[in-house]
Image (tube, rainbow over all chains, first blue to last red; front, side):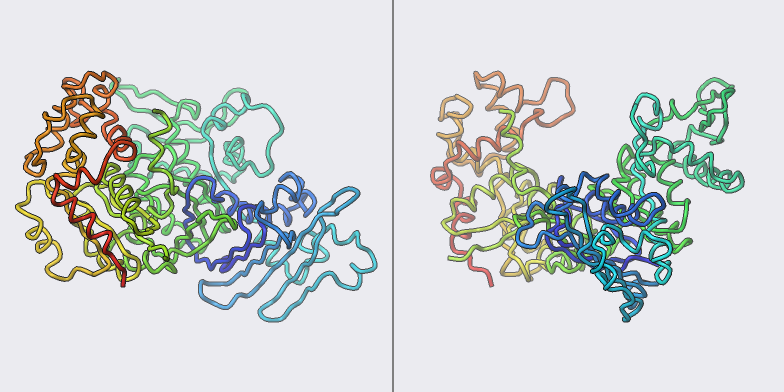
Length: 383
Length: 200
C-alpha cells in the first residue's frame, strides 16, 4: 500500500496543503520551508500508532500542540491530518484516515481529538466523537488508532503506520554513540544505534544485505572490500571492512574509521533493503560525491520496485534531480508564503511542465523556483 | 498597473544582477520569479528552445554574451531559426555583460578609483571585456578590490575569488544605467525593449 493523498491543516509550516503522492516522492524547497516538517507528519502518525506510543506521547514528544500548530493558523486552530491509502497509485483509496486535534484551553492542556474518522473504501466505519465520547470526554485524549481493541476494523491502517521507517543517518552519532549522552530517541532516527539494528537482524538476512551493500561499495568506494558484521572481545558489534592500500597486506577498518560518505551509503542501502513499508529519507545526498548522487533516484526505484514500497525523499540536490527518469508528478515543491508553505506537484505548474517537455531534467526545470527570493543579495552581507 | 511576472535566464550571477537592476529601473512593474541558468553560454544555448517553449505561459528574459560571434542577428538566427516566442525577451550583451558596466565610464572609474579616460567610449569594440576590466583594476589603488577581482598569481582561475560579488555590488550601488546607455548600443536597445514590453 502507498499513501496516495495527504491533506494538512495547520500542521507546522502548512496552513492548508494537500497533494497526491505516488510510489516515489521527492520533496524540494528552500531552507526552512518545511521539508522535514512534511516528513514529520508520517512519523507523527507512526508515533500515534506504535506500541508505547499514542496521541498524548506523539504530541508531547513534539513539545505540545503549540509547537505542532502552524504559526500562520488563525481562526481555526485545530490541527488536521487526512491520509488516503491505495494499493497502487491513481487507484481509488482502500482506506482513508482523518484526525483533528486541539488542546485543552485550561487545566492540564492535554491534546484531545476534535474528530477521528475512518473510511473503508467509500464507507465510513468510524466517526468520532460518538455517543460514548459524549458521555466520557476523557476518551477523546486517545485515538482508536492506538488501541488494539478499538482499531480491529482498520488494523491495516494501524499496521501501515507502525511500520513507517525514517532514517537520517548522522555519521558522527554512529561512530561515537557514547559521546552523545542523553536518552535515546525513540526509533533511533539518526542512526545512533544503527549497529544494534544490524545486529538484531537474523544472521542470514543480515549477511545477504551486507553482501549487497558491499557490492555497491565496491563500485563507489573501490578501496573497500569484504564488508562484515563482527563482534569485538567485549561483545560489541562493529562493521568491518578490508581497506586496500599499497602494502601487500591490506588493513582492516571499523565503522569509526569509515568516511562519512561510506557510512551514509551503508545506512541508505540498509534502510532501502530493510522492510517493505513506507521509507522516509532525509537528504540522502549528504557527504556523497556527485557521481553517486546522480544514481540515487534510479537505485531507489529499483529497490522499491522489488518490495513495492513507497519512498519519500527530501532533497536539495541538483545532481539527484538531474535524472531524466524523474517525472514532474513525482516532485513536490514547497514554497513559503505569508499564509504558510504552499505544496504543489511540480507537474501541476505550467511553466515547469513546458520546460520538462522540452527535455530538461526536473532539477533544471524546478529547482530554480526553490531559490530564496533574495539570495542574490547574499554577497552584500560580508561587505 | 499590474505586475508582469517574469523569469530570468542568465549565464552567471553578474548577468543576473544586471537584469534585476534593469527591470527595477524599467518603469514597469516586473515581478521576478525563478532565475534559471548559471551554467554559462553553452547551457543557455542548449536549452534555449525549452525556455522559448515555456515562455508560452510566463515571460522569460534571457541575457547572453555575444562573445566571439559576429553580430547579434546572426546569433539569433542560429539559435531560433525564426521561431522566437513574443514572450521571450532575448537580449545580447556586446560583447560581454562587463561591457555594459564599463559603459558607465564615470561610475566605473569612480568605483575602482582610476581616471575616466582610461576607459574607451566605444566599449562595444573591446575584444575581451573581462580581461580588459581585470587589467583596469590592476591600475586601481584599492588593494582589497584588487585582491577580489584580479586572479591570484600562478592561479588557473580566470578571475579573482570574489569577482562577481564585487561587480554585483557595483551594479546595485554604483552603476548609472542612463550614462551607460549612451556608450552601449546593445544596452540601450535592451532598456528600450524592457520599457516597451507587453506580454501576450
